[in-house]
Image (cartoon, rainbow, N blue to C red):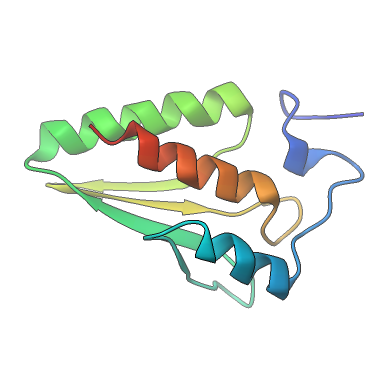
Length: 110
């Protein structure tokens, strides 16, 4: 059984990644770093752009990706930069899907 538009990290049987699995995924995700919040693991990356319009366009692409997967990051958009943070709210940790979507964000940069 799934919830939240089929989000794998929201499944009843979903498991948070172990510290070892997180380190392995980070090694496969250049530019992403672990930025714990309140004892909960979160992955973040700051992308830079030439101007606000480019940053906003990227934010919208990430938003569309998130909506399509039913799994949503924190997005901070500012002039020339966007910071994306992924974690699995239900698990209060990281799931493989967070890293999959992080790498998909990398592919959205244009």
